[in-house]
Length: 181
Image (cartoon, rainbow, N blue to C red; front, top):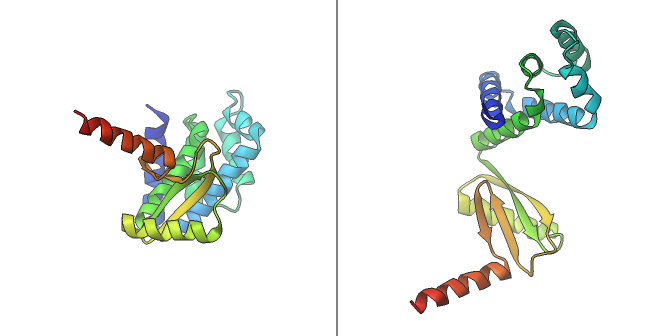
């Protein structure tokens, strides 16, 4: 089974639990902290994946390390460890975050530009796309791409909105080719 499918199953289960308890955002913050801990400590993942360490010791270790997190997040971590799926923790967090955003009418994306956008420019793009996508809020992460000639390219999920100069030139070229047919 692919990592994405596995991550979706764990994220869905955690999302349902958090929805019932009305703790969606709290669980999301806890998951972000957990992901950060795993990203910063490679030894942690090595220890939890080691075959000679028993599952009881791993569970006790997780209880000690993640004392402050909710029971649902801790139990999810324990399941991931027991089923040797801990490498997918980032995917679980990303999928859970997508579910929370979808439920709250928030869309996330990336805006590619030649230079860093000012806060006003970024806010204007976010407001424009919130209306266009019929979302309450759009959050855009600015990625500087020096290969762009000018303009911006926005990626929202699997959809790309290309407002770059090279993208416009490509569309003009295609229109000319179609006109000559």
